[in-house]
Image 1 (cartoon, each protein chain N blue to C red):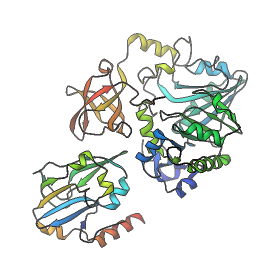
Image 2 (cartoon, helix red, strand yellow):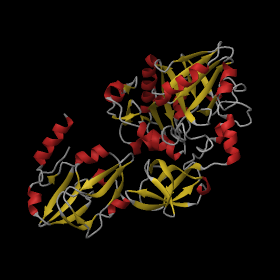
Image 3 (tube, rainbow over the protein chains, first blue to last red):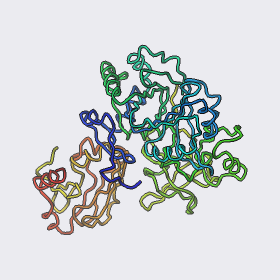
Length: 370
Length: 129
């Protein structure tokens, strides 16, 4: 991604709070976001051991309303939307006809005829432009990204903290990927960290109170129940350890969900959806490349764009890489030739002109205990 | 921020402590704060020759890698291998146990031309404003 020109850089609705908290900022797409407040390692650990709060209001929100909404989304999307239960959320890719991933999204069913789609910030315009002309008469599509914000409370203590902040909401009733309506938004049991947690959607003007309340309640407790604000740095290391791909890095328009390891998020039992035919053909012809997780055997941190070799010949490329704070190992995601995509397979990563040994491991790198 | 007076500094934020015709090299307090959590260090080899302002070592945060340059030309004579197992020393004690390497100078005039603490602090202030 090229550096955005300053005029186009957007700030989060709670920017003032992040500045006051002493955050170090960086760019993510065309957003100016907090990278960390105290430090990536400390914030990462907070989420793994107690709880952390993220401002992810850069994400986009589309609403689909109307009697034809369920049928339309079922034709557009690769999961069984018509049979999606009220109060349930589905993660999935949004696909082109050729099976390429336009975005990865979460679809929430509010009522029989009303759905919410949460999309990546960098893809709001692209997704909207793709979907809008396909919307039939009788379905209203609105882009509420400018009005709605999103906070993520993540970590083993998040349940206990959320119960205090939202006493009127029966959070226990929401299963994993379930959600409950709350005021002018909703609270979903979802996340991007590999821990238990909630994502809270609310209009921008109501967001600050939720942010303050969570940190205030969190501050009344000592570790392990204290909540700290966490930035995009820790969000990235947490999702990487949890083996979750990041759009624009580990997947893009040229990659299919079968290649990206997202076959679980497409329902090939469905007879038709946009991209169905292409995926069926790819299933038959076999994959050429596949996303794998690997860890370094020799000393070195893999980074996006580095070349992966097998016996000295190019076999793929790193798409995400970092030191993994919980595992204390250097890990990465990358695409390799399909025949090499087997746990235990040894490869080399070219880091600063040195060939360093790595081995493919099963994803996720990190799995919570309960 | 702390910039000890007895050290000399570079524009690329290394510090150097002179001991006879040798210098010990590390990164400044400003640099370690900017980089934040150091999670990886790649050291030069002993006996490796080094050219002034050329990269000889690497320091990595969670997010990115940064080159460490040689403040003067010469030869690397000692390396702090402790950083390989405990890179956080760079954050905890950047002028002490967080040193990177020691080198023999081939031309002490290069040392004389390095910035004093006062000059370095000035360039940082200018850089920030």
